Length: 321
Image (tube, rainbow, N blue to C red):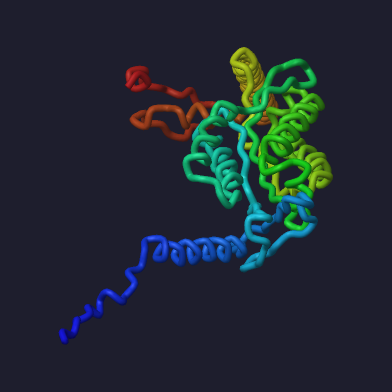
C-alpha cells in the first residue's frame, strides 16, 4: 500500500489584495476622521465653528486644541491680533494691505498658499491714497494708516454678518469716507499747518472708533502719513512766500535806513551842541583862544614872556617850518 505525501503549503490560505487593503483603508479613514475632529487654534486667533445643520455657532474657540464633529462641522480661524492697513500712493507702503488680506485668507483651515497669493495680487490695484476736497475747494490727497483688530468675543457675529473680508467691507470704506468728511471742515491753509493735521487726525479717529465698534472691530490708532496738495497750490504758496520775503526784506531795509538817519541826526545834534558849548566857553574865556594858539605853534618857534606894553617880535620864517 502506497502512502500519499501531502504538501503542507497547500493547506495555507494566501491573503488576497482585498484582505490586505481593507484594514489599511479602514485605518486611513479612521485616522482622517479622528484628525478632522480636532481643531488647533494658534496664538492670536480664535476659531469659529460652522455646523452644516445649524449654521455658524454663536461661540468662539480660544487658543489650544478643541473637538468638533468630523466632516459635519468646519473650523474657521480668525486673526485677533493688531493689524495695519495703509492707504497710500506709495505702493511700497500700501503693500501692507496685501499682507493683511493674505492673513485673513490663511484663517481658512483648507486655504491653499496659491489661493492666498492670487487673492492678494487681485487686490493690488486698489491701493491708493484718499482724494478729498478742502473747505475752500482745493483737492488734497491723504495717505492714511489704520491700526485695528477684530473683537475675538464676537468673531462668530463678524463671520456670519461680514465674513473674512472685513478689511474691504468695513475698514477701507469707513476710513475713506470719514477722512473725506473731516477734510471738508478745514481750509487748505489750515491743513498746511502741522497742529491742524493733528486735530483732524483726532477727529477722524473719534468718528472711526464709533463706526468700527458698531461692527465689532476695535480701532487702534489712526495716523496721517502725508497730505499732498496740487502743484498749482504749492506754486501759489511758494510765490506768496517769496513775495512775503521781499516785503520783509524791504521793511528791514527801511528800518535800517531809519536807524542810520536817526544816528546821523543824533551825531549832528551832538556836534552842534558841542560847537555851541565851545563857543560859549570861548566867549566867556578869551584867554583860551590865546592858549590854543600857543599850543598849535610849531615847537621850533622860540618865544618868551614880555611885558604887556612890549611889542612881540616873531621870526616869520619860523612860522612856516
